[in-house]
Amino acid sequence: MVLTANGNTINVEPSKPFTSTRLLVGTFMPAVECLKEGLSKVGATGFLKGKPKLLILPQAMTEGGLSEIEERCLLEVGLSAGAGKAEIRIT
Image: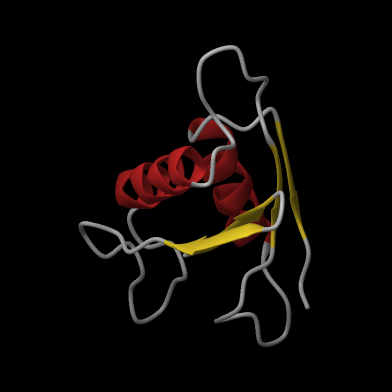
């Protein structure tokens, strides 16, 4: 997972894989924990900081677009990790 904020870019590896052979997010909580860690490392969260706004750009498994369920899952991962708002864009 790659996160960028204020010109600071980091790569965060999950402690447990959250991607399966069929789904970008196959297990929910490891994805949330990885994103929380990344948000913390990039300085987007912390004491006296507002909730970050996330722009989620999936880079894999997007052939033909995302289903409603995949979009909902990515939004829920972002919100569960502490974002105030999350948006998804396919590049």
